[in-house]
Image (cartoon, rainbow, N blue to C red; front, side, top):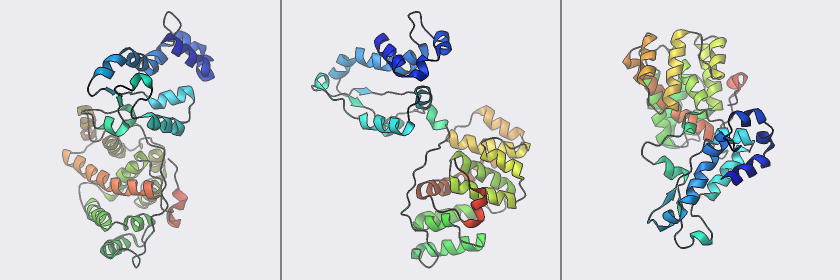
Length: 313
């Protein structure tokens, strides 16, 4: 353990040069406490238990590390780190493990463990996968079952934005969007300006570039000030108390997957809202799930009216 820690410290200047941090967090023998306990201890434990694990019928080695902090401290490119991590998942190889391979838990399997929630689940996502082979339909070129939905959306917006034109590749999805859209934007407990506060927050939290630009434009049309939209676009709460409460709730619902604490729930109600308002915000989060996910995966071209509000997560 000590040898591994020392080799790591010598290999990365970003750690070895920061003596103040090392001294303040060092154990008696000079090993950096944070590095040892968070990043290296699980390797040591696995090594000590290796024979027991090999003899078990269904052994699993589950390695959970705080990747964002680890990558920042060691200055390792996050994408290459993920590729190495995923490539190494699966069965351990080598003579020591040949008699009974130890199964490594993959990310997908780990996420199915009861109650598992990593710190990364609550962090903003900033890396996007752009898939450019989804056609942007017109009403004429869209699948037959998508055409009524596109006609309705074109009437609602006055134009047919590129994002719903991409969603039209799936009649089921575009018709689901229209049904949710009609409910979200029908008269309810929240004003349309407040709806746009929530939808813009959703887009920023989900790091969907297209949706952020789109809802920035719509929020400004509804009379929301540029100071308010700029705050949300920069992942801050707007100054208006009511808008801040709506934005905070939307962000928390997405980041915590609906697991609001009692304090978070009460804080929203204290801003002048009711329990029913919470469900209306959830309806908007559901609509944003469709548009934000498709916007990120398909990455449609940003329409000219929204280009002044272009945003990069």
